[in-house]
Length: 109
Image 1: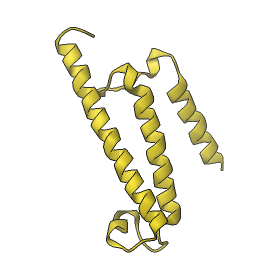
Image 2: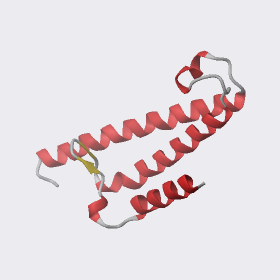
Image 3: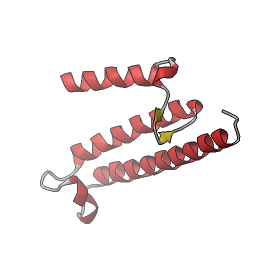
Image 4: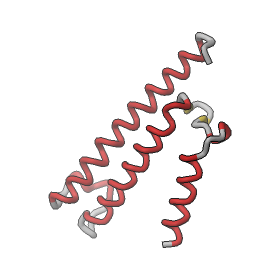
C-alpha cells in the first residue's frame, strides 16, 4: 500500500505540474508540451489495464506468455485493452516526436 501511495503521489506531481521543468523532454524522446496530458492519461490507463491483467491472469503463467494460454474473458479484456491503449500511446509519442522535430527544423519552436 505504501508503494501505491508513493506511485500515485509522484504521478500526480509529474502530471499536474505547470512548471516547464517537468516538460516531456528526455533527450531524444521529446514531444510538444500540449501532448503531455494526453500521453500521461494514456500511461495511467495502460497501467490500470496492466494491473488488471496481472490480477486476473492465471497464477502459473508469466506475463510474457499470456497470449499463448487460454484465459478468462476478463483477463482477455484487460490484455486487449492494455495492448490497444499502449499502441495508441506509442503512435501519439512518435507523432509528437515528429511534430517536435519538424518544429525545430523549421524554427517554429
